[in-house]
Image (tube, rainbow, N blue to C red; front, side, top):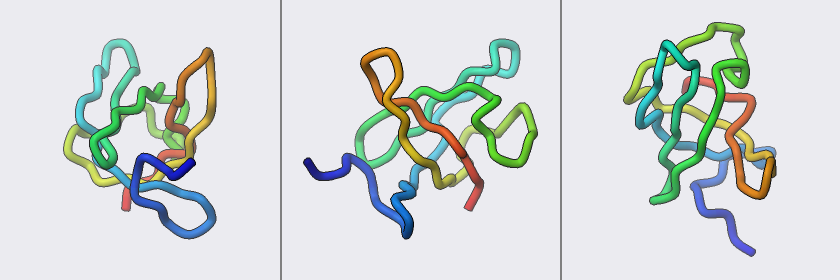
Length: 75
């Protein structure tokens, strides 16, 4: 099965943070027409917030029957 998002070396994908809720610590990344949920603890640099519109690279984890973004790094 092909990846739904643009691939980077070592299996990383690229996308853009489409929205982030500072109060809940939840956000979404849009990549190649798909949208992936993430929690602030998945931001690799330890910060607990990221701005909408930020270009990022990430990996996908399969959790609770869906894909979730993890190891999120601004590019």
